[in-house]
Image (cartoon, rainbow, N blue to C red; front, top):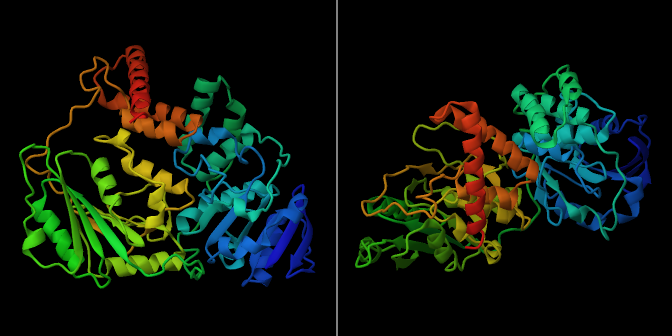
Length: 511
């Protein structure tokens, strides 16, 4: 392991296994690449000189538990880039929970690390910058889609107290970063959002940003970096499967058949069957009429709703792992075995498998951190369920799975995407007795826009800038598909709909 101490964007000292070494460079990024080239099997740590006594050496092995991890922690109140980044990016990677290990590409020069084998492939791909923070954020932003797992990690330091002083970054830096890492249109949207919400006219930062080219890297840069986590996340390997179902008797039978031939069999399959017709009874006769190689725990309820059904099922989980399944999925016989093997390899407590609809093609073949969460294709260590549930405020709306994923992230559990093995989602038609729920706002004269459940998700998990940025993009997207074409009339109506959505989102918080 090599530790690079620095201050004021200059290297002050380099230690390898407690002994000083000399590298002829004061530029920090250049120094890191030189070290990676000379010591390709080493973990490289950077640390501000003022934090030398607080560097937590005892935790480094557990933090960097495989070679495709980049982690850092900032003692400054704000991230390197201003909060204005939220006007452009709406992913969970912006609103960082600094109390836990949290997925984000927003890196800090205060303290952090990366394995040499994961850094070296970018040597000729990223232009060296004298600004170490800019370099780290650029590296993580480009490398995260390729499979580099990036985190804000408080365990890097012991006895965290106080804050480091850091210069406030100019809008020029923010606009440059957007231009180099996002589509060109976002630069102009950033300009517009600053004008609308902060009354700032950022013409010069906009113009200067246009002189920079967008940074791109090869999609296979990290393919040769070996991954084998030393973190222990599996003891006995038992797993339960939960399946909420309503009116899909035939499709559910196929799911059970797929589960029955798994090379790694589940211990329990927990089915919550819903039928809102009060005098109805279960239609799933094959549960008892056939023999199954696992225990089927069957609950029948007249209360419809996926959130309630999933919560009922989660309460029945007793195994070490749980597979959140759906009643119209199909998958191969090695799904559970291969997915658990992937989780062990990456030390991941939460995973989402590729979940294509019929005809959908895979866009990314890299195991990587994703901003979404699927409630029909995920594997989770069951101890996380003690503090996570499906919020009833999302019932019959959109966003309950995304919210559940955010709860897991805020518990310190990252969500990894596994391109293989895949789970096919048939998107089967609804059962004949499904009834369309009557939403509380259904008869409002002014219909809320966006859906109150989407607004609820935004309020729970996004920064103010992210919500405002979403408002702007929604304004333009909705204008194309609605009937009112007078811009002034449309704007007034949009504001009323937004206000109505806020009202109902606040009502849903109490459910």
